[in-house]
Length: 169
Ligand SMILES: [Fe+2]
Image (cartoon, protein in one colour):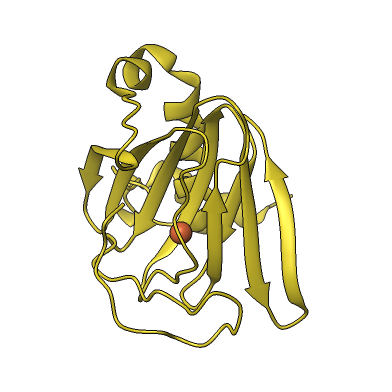
């Protein structure tokens, strides 16, 4: 009896016909996986945490083809303001502490508490604000693809763009 493999040959035995395994993440799931891998490697990011009372502290951990990874440190009370991410998609992962996200969408405002391990994945056009409403410092990891070059700040509650802005953390 013949099978497809015996007739046509095993395609897995012909390496040159297989697509190359990408050396870098290219899908949303792979970017989320990259974030989880970095999150699990505390020795990699913990020494770069820096709490600064004057501004959110941010540090670029990694860049690759078409993406950037940022580490952000938040003291209590610090927040991002309402913004979008230009043409970038992203993965936000909380590494330490607690952050509160307020997102504006078609169903109105959604507010959620984000704890270590929680991830939020968003596409271009996603509008949110992230705040450290807790009494402790918080640390988060942000993967942007493509790298974040532009953010539009939004008026406080209207959900309409207030003015063009540039990335400041
Ligand atoms: Fe954001």
